[in-house]
Image 1 (cartoon, rainbow, N blue to C red):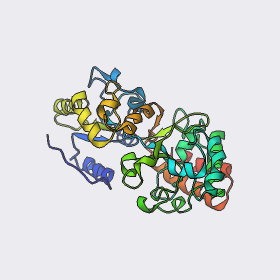
Image 2 (spheres, rainbow, N blue to C red):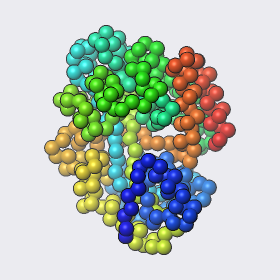
Image 3 (cartoon, helix red, strand yellow):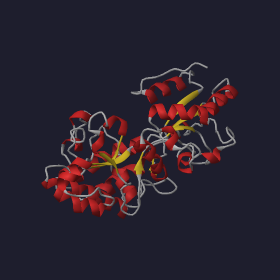
Amino acid sequence: MEVVVKPWQGRIESLVTSVVGGTAPDVVYLSPDYIPQFLEPENLLLPLDDLRDDWKEFAPVVLDSLRGLDDGSLYGAPAGVPIMMPYCNSAVLESAGVDCPKTWDDMREAAPKIKEAGYYLTEYIGGTSSSLNGSFYQYLYQAGGEILSDDMTEAAFNGPEGREALSFVKEMVDNGWVPEAPLTVAEPREQSAVGQGEVAYQLGESLINLRELLDPADLHLAEPLTNEEASVWGTVGAWSIFNTTQNPDAAKAWVRFMGDTTFLKDFLASNGYQSPRADIEAGALFPDDPQMAKGAEYVKHLRTELQHPKAREIINILIPHLQRALLEGADPQEVLDTAADEVNAIL
């Protein structure tokens, strides 16, 4: 089998072109929000329920993120779980004389002291080129809300939970508890307030990348932030098989091997991913890195990308409406209702 590495930028467009041109690969690496795109309207992926006899060893929240919306079948074999680690900057906390927040109320209590000390409570990335997966969606989940209804037929983010989430983000923006630039501009990380060590708390960050910018001794892993519920942003990398493959048995054998413990231990440790399998202990993957090992505790709180073929379109619809509330003072309920009407029109 030949392994072809494609550039990350424009990878899906390239993949769609290969499908249309009849040159689709046998196996492809996908995240949860892309699997539905290849299931609707044409089911182009092979179900993988019978691929292994040890699926029970995989974390249910991981497997559920890779199932089809209609039939509940598994269409991705988990390869790894990149978790965006919630953390506090202990140097900022010490300067402000506050503890690492665990709840929204803790955030509100600590924010004035952090601001007075010359720092920011947190960061909210809201520019038009950003994703809501690690920002607004996480606050929505923490408020107990969901993006869409249970049957995925209409918007649900404009319910009371969504209003509460957006109002909380707006409260942070209005009080100057977050830096202004990320609200509209995608900054190089090293030039951002986070990269400059000016932010007290982050919902989630690549710990390995952050250690290159900040003193690792200042990075204190935090509990998942909660209001009504706790959530942590991350994704699941998975292997999917196109049903156009001329070698289904070989493709399945390769994907099966990629999920075996022997291979996964090396793959996960070298990439800094958490294990999708419960029978691989994080301590064994990261014996000399207790912070990365602790990341395994966050998997049960994992909220990945929306599993819907319109997931990316929904984000593109929402962002400018959210900006009206955060930058122009528009009423949170009004902007969410307006966005919901537009989302419902494409569902």
